[in-house]
Every structure is written in C-alpha cells, then in structure tokens.
Length: 306
Image 1 (cartoon, helix red, strand yellow):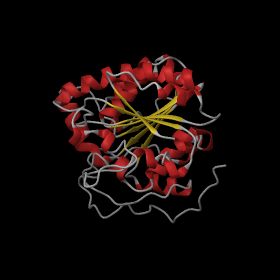
Image 2: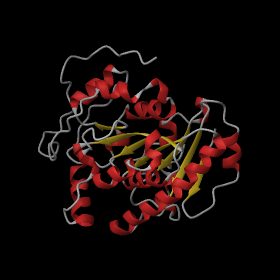
Image 3: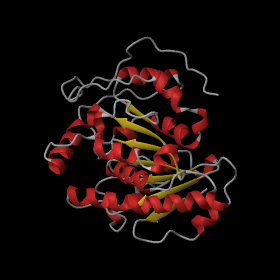
Image 4: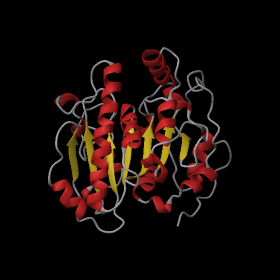
C-alpha cells in the first residue's frame, strides 16, 4: 500500500478516497504529521523527502522513516492506508504554533472524510507541533472519526489538551502522550516564548486526568522495564537534551505500530496497568550523567499480548 501525500491547503488526491473505500476489514488508516521547521514547499525541508517518506533522502539529520516504522513498507505487505500530512511549519515559533492549530482544523475535516470513506475511525501520530495539529484535530473532529492518537514530545499546552478531551471526538478516542525529560528545555522554551511562563507544557503530562489518556515517559528506566516486559524492548541510550528521541530511539516504533495499527492487541488498560504513571521532575535528565537508562530491576519475561 503506498503512502499518500497530502498537504494542508491543497485538495487530497482523488485516489485517496478510492484506496480508503477498498480497504479490507480491520486494516488501519493512519495519518502522520511532522513538526516544526518542515515545509512541503522547500525541497531541503520537505517532510515527504524526510521522516514521512518510505525512502528518506540520504544524509539528512535526525531521519527515520515513519511509514516503514509503522509497517507500511511495500515489502511488508501489510494492509492499511498511510497518509503523510505536510504543512508549513517554518518561520517564527509563534506563527508556526498558530498554523498548527489551523492545520488541525483541516485535519479534522480530512479525518472525518477518511473515516466515512473507509468505514472506520482514523489514527493520528504527530511530533512536536505536529502533536498540536493532532490535538487541534481532536478538538474539532466529528464524534467517532478518530481512534488513537500518539503524541510525540508534543509542542502543546496542558490546558489545550484538557479542552480537546472535552470535545465529542475524544469520547471514543484514546491518546498516548509520549514524553521525555530530554525534551525539558524545549518545553520550557515553549512556555516562556508563547505563554510568558503562564501555561504548562504537555511534556509534564496530565497525571491520569482522563480514562482515555496515558502519559508514557520514555526516558524513565522503570517505564522501559515495563515496555520490555510487554514485548517492546527499547534502546536505553540517554541524552541530556533531545527533541527527537521519541521517534529516533530504537524499538519505540514497534510500540507505536502495535498501538495504532493493531489497537485491539494492545488495550490501553493493559498499558495503564503496567506502566508507571509518576513523571520524573523537570530537569532530571539535564543534570544526570547520560550513560544509558539502566534497568531498575532484573529483566522480566515478555507478557503475551494475544
């Protein structure tokens, strides 16, 4: 199944609707959304040549093919539909933040149309300001049009997440909020630049505020222990600062693929029962020695997920 490119402000290609209507029962529909500093109109910064591509151009920094990670590579022969959403995310942070919200309104309409054509809800995954795009889509989408959202170091605020959770589409959706103390400086900058310190970034988590929301701190050794026990061994390298570890750390896309493409095999309740929910304090990673995230206890036997 090919990856279908869609750019904000432009009509989706007509074959998207045909492919959606022809999907076999149970096949997932996943929309992937990049973050800050990408732009489909600039070849050097085109996300369709980078993380949203099956074959990213060589030599690019911080590159990992999201569609391949999610199992949409042609050789995988996995049924499903992957949509790569590009949007104008370059320029000043404040402008890009506003455009993320506007793009989310478009994504809400796209998800509704896709859900209707495919006869099933749509899953979303977004990094950085792409996470805000996904949250804005959740706030404006039709009820039943969205299934699961995976937010990767989302450049968004706690209050807008709480507001999105109160909207109709959230009632039938589930959200995995992937955070890391490696991202603390970026979260702090978001708070200071866009809110003068008056709002708190989503990287601090929501603390179990909703039954369908789960925070996952991926640089917590205890969280990685639990993921390994569930059958998702994850690379334990550590960095003091990283905005990109949520998609570059080895093993995490196995989790995202199962969560988005086979949600029945990975119930949210199972994750909630096994993953620690206490977030480490801000700046924990910045002042620690980056020597890897050691196991907090002996390695556990993987639990069956079927």
